[in-house]
Length: 179
Length: 180
Image (cartoon, rainbow over all chains, first blue to last red):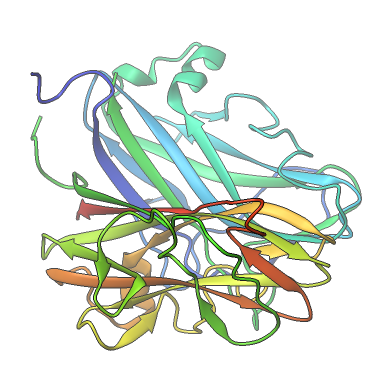
């Protein structure tokens, strides 16, 4: 029996956003949100502590990124979304797999009035390769990623922390699997 | 490529709550989530079947604790919080944050939109707890005890897991030990 073979999960790195200040937005444009609050952890790019860094070790592997971000939307007559941007050199960045992220700009929370939730997202690098004609599977060395949020119409969303008196935090993990 | 090194997953343990009667709860106070219902799985501590037991192998590792908890809140005018409590000495517990109110404060894990059903999912990260609480889960070996807790922020009724015995539900937890 092979010890390591296709689909073996062999590495995982944990990240925590710490407890950032409130990131309140009514914007329908994509903006980066802070993941570098008090006591954040996990490797970061030298360029910004809002950019995760992951060392991909194998030249024949893919990565799965999962994230838990608390959020609160009001009045919730419409929805919101989160997407990632990723890079293999911290210079050329690609937008997610789809330009509006995995849930589009309206499908992560909302449409039911005010709502609080711990949102859950997951990304697969194989989808990035399919959509951008890249070859991240063969890449070794650092991988970079940050996260952005937007609203669909006229709601206000509080990403992670609601206010200084209501601190919250999110977590992210990056797993490396043999292809 | 090294077989074992930084960020290798050295152990995974899984737990299931089982199913049973509803644990409906109203406003106030943290409540330990009933994790010892019919057919529960995974190691438990002698102090109670809701006390998850994990044997940590390395003195150089962090824990990731993944919770999946079906829930229903009614009337949903306000919300519910969740938190994780740890013990390294099988007696004294500490919470995952210094404030004591978990990753979404005491109200932000679900709710505020009227009646709401949801699966609450969270991935706790012990490295953050070590920093925020000045603890050393990272360097500890041996028994780690864990309990999931929830808090109903206002005048709602919250049903973690099962709503009634006609509608059984169950929760799962996975604990990953990851070499630093």
